[in-house]
Length: 358
Image (cartoon, rainbow, N blue to C red; front, side):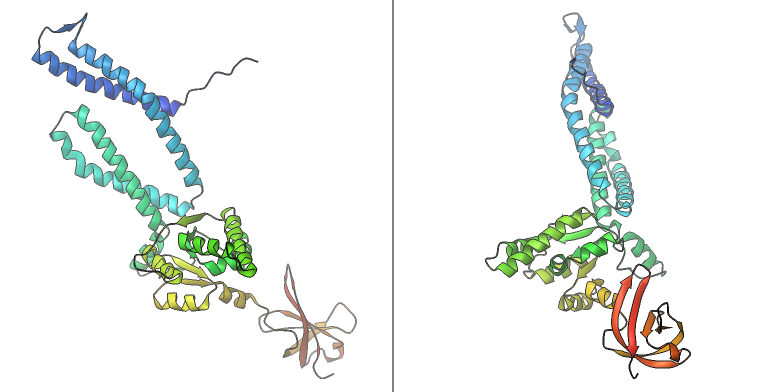
């Protein structure tokens, strides 16, 4: 079987060509100075300027092959990381990169006044790239909060806890219901998991006590599954002088201006007092709970007969349908009924009941 030829990377070859041109330019500058200092100097059949160009271009070609491939591999890794980021962070990052590059360009431009362009140009380009990278990282960190900040400063609205990244605590990972919430599409933005939370879960997973070990392993497994559902980032933020995990989470949220996702009511209260926006899954579960419970007695207006013989149908104040057994003779009346069961369907909840006073 014939061996397939390797297709060159166009991007890498373009970078190599640029380095060849740069090397030739530097060689030209050095050769010209030598030629000026020693007129008539020949190295074989070539003058010093020509030799400088040849050597510079050769070095640029040799070094460029290695450097360009490394740069392209770095760009490929960057593309993979960008694809895992939410769009708001990507846009904010690129805006930050442009601002960083523009700022460095204005500051570094005077360098061209103190040296030859062929020598200053690569230094200038390096500084611009560094400025762009710094701008991207800073803007990406605060990217998701920028729209909320602008709206708040404009007086249009306050910061929304549902927008942007959220710091996830240990209780949420161990509970596991966050998986269903994430898969339903109700969570947006990146989930930030501090290293302190991962360490706490790992400590539980390594515990000699079976119950603690099971909780730790469940939490780590939930984080692994979450990573395939939403963008998830392990962050190394470690506030100085703070030892307790809960206190670290509050400080991280304040510094990054992000929300806290928790099931711990005490942590939620402390974070709220500190000014952190809190998303409490207990509050969400309570809001989504059935409006009535089995055994509870409620008053219902019976409006029409049900599908089955003897049934009457009414509704609670929130529109939940109530099916009352053996109550068809009371249609048109408001009666007390006792809830026997609550069923959730794809269309909503159904409450089954019987007459409280037959």
